[in-house]
Image 1 (cartoon, rainbow, N blue to C red):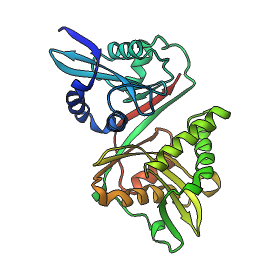
Image 2: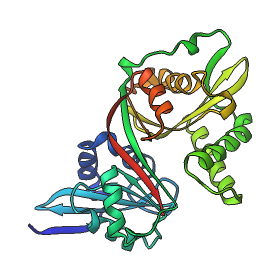
Image 3: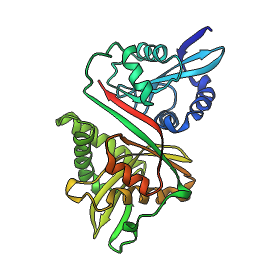
Image 4: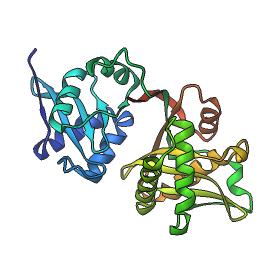
Length: 285
């Protein structure tokens, strides 16, 4: 069977949207970035160079080489071909790979780094919940607890917590670039209304963001509770609180992923209704 691999452009948008919808829960970064940044790559945040593989005219695999060097995957077929094409078309270096776990593993061979230890690797469990099935945690009903969107004066705290999250969860190395990236990330989440804080007695105790967002589905990421405040149900409360806040805007489903070995996080999410639906993962090269 002949395979055509090429750059995707505006004329392919409907075909690409339909293909990603077939793999909806594991394509939220791709779908959200397309909605926010479009399919034309000008190097701006949330933009990417998209390469697609076609068999008999049908799109069967996609790789997007993003503005930040990450490669996003949804390529159950022709994985190596679309990844190499996206790299060549973008001219960027690959800094990380994100997507379904089997594809993340396989693509390292296509990149020629199968035997090179990654800087960071996370095999994750993918979870989802229909908001109609969301379980409201009791912490949210305590009189001194509330979940709210972030304010301008929260930014210094948000950046500190994002840096702490990156060091703990992503094994990032402290340094000035990390702080700059953390501030840019949190400013973008704040501006979009996608960052939420849980407060107890007026003091922030936990944070969460939407790292991908569509009109009917959201993906949760960056959930962080300082170590000294853990074990009190704050993470599940802030996640539930943010979902309750957007439930009236048309959002019907939420997705998140967390480390396979992070059993406390898995217990927190399943306690509010999330159920495992597959595997996901990321690698930083």
